[in-house]
Image (cartoon, rainbow, N blue to C red; front, side):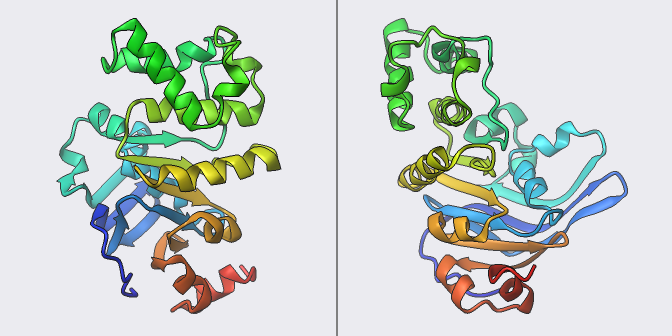
Length: 258
């Protein structure tokens, strides 16, 4: 594994991680992976390489599958995530999925307020309105929805729904936000907005992004990791990996031969 040249402390570290789904060995001895704090870290690789499985392991959503078996060590700021209460972990490590998943029949306002109430983060009504407005502003959605906050979230466009879901995750003040191909189901305009948002958010939190698009990884990420057939081939600063990959498989992937 290349020297990342990184001076930032690692927020997530992975050692000897193996994940099985039933009899399928999906992730194979992932080790030496350290995700720097307040960065955009992109996980790239072809379909079936284990990208989403790795992402779901970081907040233990993988364990919701009865077929899943996980071995190894993953830490969050030095704490073993497998010793944590999963509910607490998932508040600290939020997740945005490929398909926007707001509560469609709930209002735009309540999509965010419900999460805050459920976790006991904000109870005061005036403070609740302040936080909702703040996170909607943060994702660039406030001006588009401020006069229809009581409308069902399901009436928003796909791109707006995705930004609402990001706002809902940010309201819980996570340390890390996992994003599984968050632009693949939205139009080009919203994809560009989300990419800009990802870069902006990384000033305050760590973003771990799964993408099937190496060019997107190059545009937004400070660091990239390349997975192939369940194995971590290499990771490091984005431009180093793209301009001088240390493995032939990585080189083939970034030029589009895989």
